[in-house]
Length: 301
Image 1 (cartoon, rainbow, N blue to C red):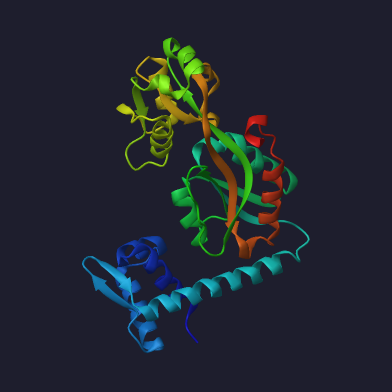
Image 2: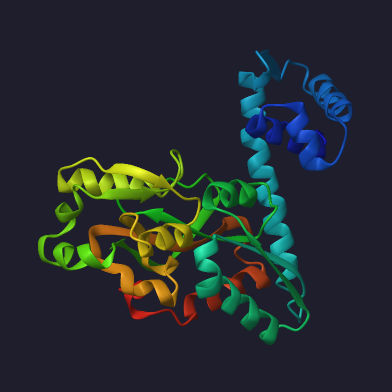
């Protein structure tokens, strides 16, 4: 019978491509990873990896084995969840990942309520973007993740994960005082000649700016970059240009900058989890509480 620990190393190698990355993930040396994978190849009786430049790729046999490993790990987690469900108390550690702008709206109220209802449960909150938290879910580094997907894009969850809708986070145009009224009258096209503020190229939110402006019939002239929505709002407040941000990201002092919503553009916020863990009492309780977090009306509609 194959060793599950070696199978997990192979699975992680399939995602991370280098021995160094797998060794850092598991806190062991690269030589130990290499040795365990050589033993696994001897057990299987065939080559599982091949080198392509500086990375390792799985052979067909390796990919087949990783596919089965995912099902094996899920079955083990289902067994753990079933046993945990027989306990009289909800205990242990629950790790909830959240992106920054959902922290105060969803994650922290849910964490506080979980600890109030279940004194024996320890709740950890970690800040991760969905591009980080979804892989972390698959690797069982976190138990749930508050994630989002833009309405104008497509989102396919990896096999074994599920997501439950929590609310819509509308995208809004923020603009300096002199331009807000014109945008309210004419729509986004009024900002055609304005300087734009956006995230760096490749960041998820840049797509919202490009999509909205393309739908309005122009390409934005991006003059300023910021790594945070707070930073973008600060630039708008100082008259440097306009931007598109999620409504949920705006602090009270920056809400006056809103010129109006961006048509048909929202972030759909949800809680994502492993299907195999859904029966675990702590996970089920967290999902239940997240459903009932008191959110503003505009996020529910």
